[in-house]
Length: 373
Image (cartoon, rainbow, N blue to C red; front, side, top):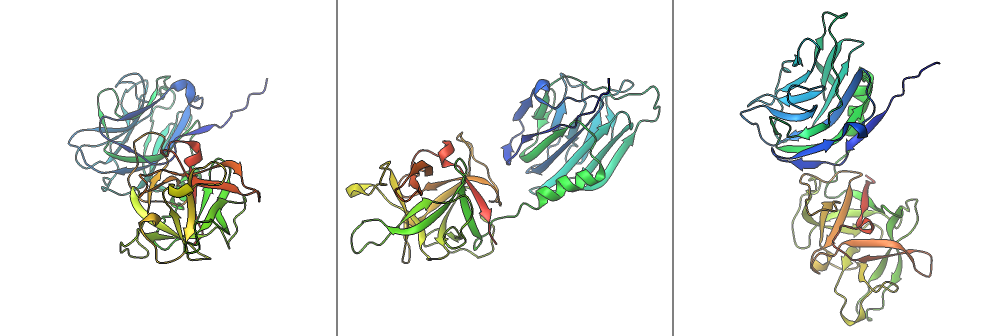
């Protein structure tokens, strides 16, 4: 029988999450790609604090002496300390890279290990920074294990204080070219800044936040236009918005947009602001009778303010800056933070109703932000 090696990989953590020294994420051995004699782990890491003791980034094994693979940070300076268990040494590997990690800076880290090739390699931001070679190639072997993979705190060491994202587990040894490709793909994730032109895609239906400039009946002196979702291909006339500051707050165009921050959106074609308001006097959406979302001409007011967060169905929210392709939730500030909402309820013209509803935990509150320029 001819046997073929199947390359498999899994992304264990995608969007950035914040972690403290006692936090951990645990992944069962059975839920990871099947490893025979080689593996790789790549991730993005930002640390907020150096500790005076060893800290763990990841560790696979059932106790502190079973450690294939493990990546720790050294005391005080946070130098990379990648290791593994061998049949001659429970703690083989690279003692440290040349430089410690700087605080509050994102790094891309790649750990690759192969028993057939008898080597461990470590990369930082796509650059090869250290390796370890097994000398007695006939008798010394890497010992793999069927224990869980821990991210953060593990058996005898605290975890790190910082943020981590894009944790990927491969059942082969990545080549230098593959490491660079993984790094390059992540480094291309661009920040959203004040003044960015963006589009908002409703994740569960794939349609863009838009307007057809249909006016809500709010009286002759109150011209506001219905916001809808319309089409799965971007309409550069109606689907593009500019990221602006909160009402009556000064910002510097070009500054990155912080998460957990109040901002606004200006519709590019009409220069109207994304707006909502209370439901008094029957001001509700035509079908679901929820809080209206409109674009509103004029100089703006605090009904144009939105709190922006990465989407998270729990009450824990990320810090950092808004990035292209982030999955977000938007909360209308003045009406006690109902979240921007859409669903497959269609209006008479075939467009999709948009409202404010819920606490941001539903799939109908998920939006993907796309950078236009």
